[in-house]
Length: 343
Ligand code: ADP
Image 1 (cartoon, rainbow, N blue to C red):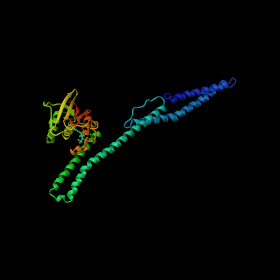
Image 2: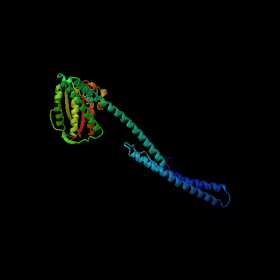
Image 3: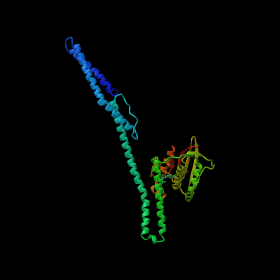
Image 4: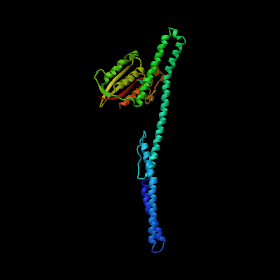
């Protein structure tokens, strides 16, 4: 029935009904004029059926078609339209499937918006939680200074320095939040260029040398220093190296080692950053790249972490259409590997 067009059905009925009328008159009347009576009956019912057909076509089917076009256009212009359903020659059936597809899309859209709402609430909760600690610390130092501490030379400078540290922490959080929101909204455009990834990694290593040696950690690079060219956003990849190398030091063991290696695999270069630090329990690995996810919250905060570093790293790598992976053994160390397109 779905495949039968209402137009064809009406046309078929416009012939069937007059034929039946013709038959009834012809069979149930007497006299030599019955053929004319039957023909007149046929004609009258045929004209009536055709008039009805034209009227229905004009009043109903045209409107059905118009509605179909409106729903179809509306659905096609929505943010996430599903593929078009299978249409038939039955206009009413087409309108029905189009409305059902639209309703299904709405349902999916509502689900998506609900998830976004949960994410938004969670995100806001995390942000305020992260900012609360430095703000309360600053408030504490300022109040103590106002309550007479300002005149006490043994604490005034010290408290101001501590307040400054908390301000630095807030700046780090806000910078990371800005980076992640730009990356997530797609505002941040990747600006690729050809550059030597070995020298970039070494630059970052040199800049982190002080932090590493304070913990007795050595950063090692391949013995043979040959330039390896990649095609990527230099500034963003620097950020990736900073986050991964800083993490290897933050979560590294004293007198440990962070090895930075490069492997040539066809079209890509694989970069490996391996430490022999505290490692990560298997259960955490799948969620490690989520925003604000930390294995040990207090250790992370103590080390000045925001819980956003790996989320930023993953966004940057994915914005380059590349991948990042982590392997870790608790107590033995962690290895991060990411791919880069050769330049
Ligand atoms: P954070 O600011 O807390 O360091 P990240 O997003 O950079 O945030 O990392 C998320 C969590 O992953 C960290 O809190 C830490 O628990 C874990 N982690 C990251 N890198 C390492 C590593 N090299 N060794 C052990 N744990 C790590």
